Length: 517
Image 1 (cartoon, rainbow, N blue to C red):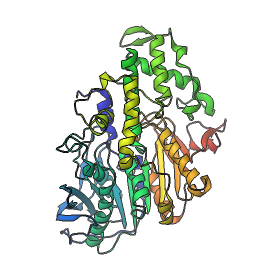
Image 2 (cartoon, rainbow, N blue to C red):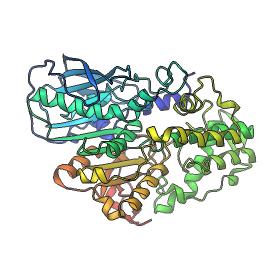
Image 3 (tube, rainbow, N blue to C red):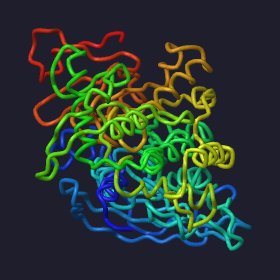
């Protein structure tokens, strides 16, 4: 595939980092203060016992301090560590799974962190481990035996018979998450001579889905789970990501990104002040009633050319905002850069190719509305039992004493945020209402924020720190501090929303209060 804007956007999103992880090299005070501990010699520990698996090898290697540089992030400095690799297999599966841990040479904070992945990659072996290490954590991640290609699962999705490789899919969906927790905590305890005092999961996107799977399937593995922008209902939302492509094909109208941006701007302008302040961010995008037909006949400049918005283009936008009946649509104010790109979202496209149609040559361009209806029904029917991660019964996690925080950007162009609010609503209905669920699971929506960060709105600056305070000190967060450039906000606990007081500095969090929508 060519390196279209959607590919660049998705590759950026596959680094599942919290804002705190990104800001840590610039603002060391964001790291949570904790007891210091000096590590033992870097040597391979005894092979951990991992239920249902056989350990093939354990290696250890001293890792010097360094700096990781990526195109989209500030340089990330990390301290010296002991890198321990555990390779295991599940009898009868013929797989080979890597669990990799980075254990700080000095300054261990007494905590263990499981690091989530992105797209079709189960783990994050660079920024994820390095950012955890920089904050004093012993950290581990896994490849699940499926490699590290976040965009394309071609190397593992199908077995020799051309059917879905259900064992590797099970690794990716759930099994290897528990292996990671068991092996990672075991080598941490062996290396430091004592178990971690507390264990945390940290992930966004696929990492967020993994966090929910941990809570649902392995509720005792972590004391705290940070599940940001979670890929809930993966068999449904990935198909929904392709709805815009099908609409454009069927309607034989393919607007440019410049035209899409005109509709995005118009919606923001129409609904911006509903929260009391004009800041270019929609606090409640689902309450924005802007009609795309209002732009019909409007002339705009795109790449130096004048374009007149057509009724057909407005209808494409309307259908994308409305969504397919099987899932939600793109929220107003969110960019069209993924759903309206010249190329389909490769993760979604490959999901349909390999896991739904089980045909690598399947071409989305041939799909009309009727065919899309079939795919939208087939995907969850085949795959929900493996990977849906939308079970609202979190009673096991509550009984285990766990705490979980989810935050999600309302302008997420990849995983539409309504999936998160819908899940939280269903958990409430299943588990006794909002007050009871707030005792262990809280959701925070981030207006204007894109997938795992970016966008025009303030993103959380230290959600993991808030989780640690909740788990270890009992301080349940009512808000999450957030920032972008010189603007600060306190993200409100769902379903509350932020309202301007009408008199303070609109760039300061102190000028807002959380209130009922």
